[in-house]
Image (cartoon, rainbow, N blue to C red; front, top):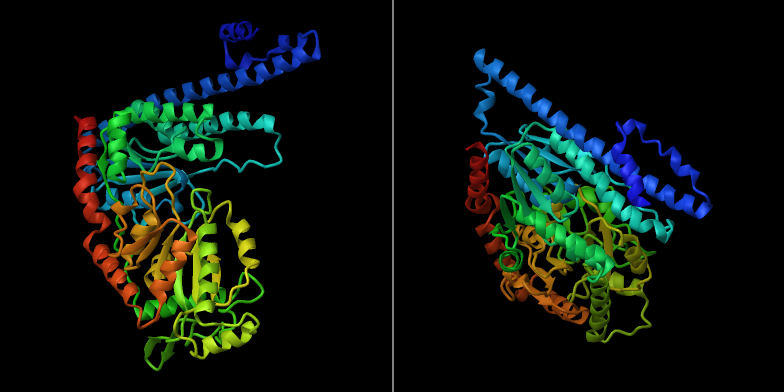
Length: 556
């Protein structure tokens, strides 16, 4: 039956005549229902074929038109100024460009170091850094994002949505990459997601005679396996597509040596390691920068997630610009308050590959262990303890304020859990900061916590790189290749459980702020690493030669 329908479709003279009227002649409802499903499926195929034909035709016509205009300009002696920049690059991100810092840094380097015009094709959402927005050689083209699937949808529709979504994304990508942007010399695409990104970019690079370079951040099939299970047929198909189209790239970059080895040995792909490094705007914050930041955030910092906590009781005026939770201004000088809480920052995507419950459990353990060390009676009213802390009567262990930045699907779930906690010395705040304030927060904090556990075990958390760039030591979850970045007892510590993290918090903050020697050692190590390596240097050494060679092959 399906073959007869397909045979009928092929013989039709034009897509506009695909009416399928004969399909309504089914003898019973069940047969009619099956035919209706086939009708929908084949209409989708026909629409896709028609769209692809238009894309190819328009691309050819646009190319001929640009060649004619270029010839006329050369005959008129024009175009020399435009040719001063040595080509064009397209950076492709099937995600929120504001939450893709590595691809933003690529765009900046392509524009500033490789002297290319850069088009960024990505979803909208969060604003990228001002350095991107203010660069006249970088142009952002925002695609419409696929709407979030409603949980109320019947399960029978989920496979259909799973197939329909990448098909529509594929068509949208082709439209932008083949029609909306000028012809690039090179496409640089972020992976994951792999489907349909790698397929669309490969087709676009073939149609437009451009180089195709993949920047491997992780493996897409391992991320899909977190939700569907590694044994899912969808995951197997996804892996095949990722591997097949990964091999078709003209060049590849990756984030770790472990990933480079995996790509080489098991995928047949030669990749160049380009470690994440912080750009220049990640640096330790000065006292003045800290004070201004905390003044801007003061109202949010003093607003608890629950009814009350050890931070809310601090006697700081929300509108006052002379004093914050951490700093105070006296005359023309700014100083750090001696009884300030220790500021611990963690950036999370609120997804299953970052188990936030580890941090919550560690916070509870820290709170209880400090109470036990001080022989504190559980019957003592919390307000009395908070008053003593505020008056600097308890100095052995500080209050901890955890600021959690980021957006993601599990954020509300954990915020509800935080509200139910009754902690005497620990408080939490969740927020989303502007791109310019995030480096300042890292540079103003005392410790960073990374909960990232790689789905593949082969990538490294970029948030840790940013923390080191700001001279911020890190406690990170231990996994296979994390020691390529975090050097234990030099710039950070590793943990495998909430109990280990609680032990590290107690050890590092004992005697805070002046007598915590272990924390100072790690901070010096983070400062040394952050100042010795920067993104521009790393990109110039490892990525620029690869990009230049890929472009020269296209032009040659």
